[in-house]
Length: 223
Image (cartoon, rainbow, N blue to C red; front, side):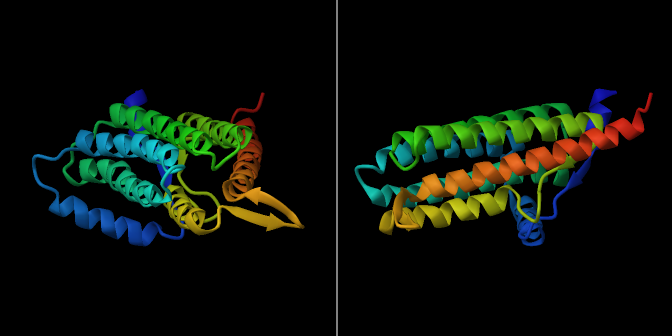
């Protein structure tokens, strides 16, 4: 019964890049060698995030390593986004296994990246902690909504994981040339500003979604 619920949940992906991304993933899935399966792609996505965090840390001694971070972000998109598309294209779905492994590894990936940013000196430890907590809480909310309401919300307000990757890659380019920004006469690390905005945005989405989901569940199960 649980397998059926996970398999049949409604996926909501309405981000800006979703149409182009879906077309790209179909193209890759159709041309993927037969010896490559979804597990290989999932592993590529995880290793890419581990290396991204490592390169963030090492780039404090050589800023050009930030280009490798961007390369790893692209590799993560390729592996993390294509694994499910390939499984659907080949009709080799494993709903419970894929759902669990894909999303638990996503959370580990964000842990590696935020840790790399903090250890590399690009983001205050408390800001990186706030970003990580906001991300994890938002994901907990998504997973709970999937199991209780049957809706798997991938994007919010036209933004999803792919858009966040693009913003992160653009930010990495700016880190090379302008790691510090001025606001109202004060100077802040670029990623302290970006991380604070991201954390506030995710907490806002979390609160709005929590209220909406609670209201919906209350209406479905009135006493």
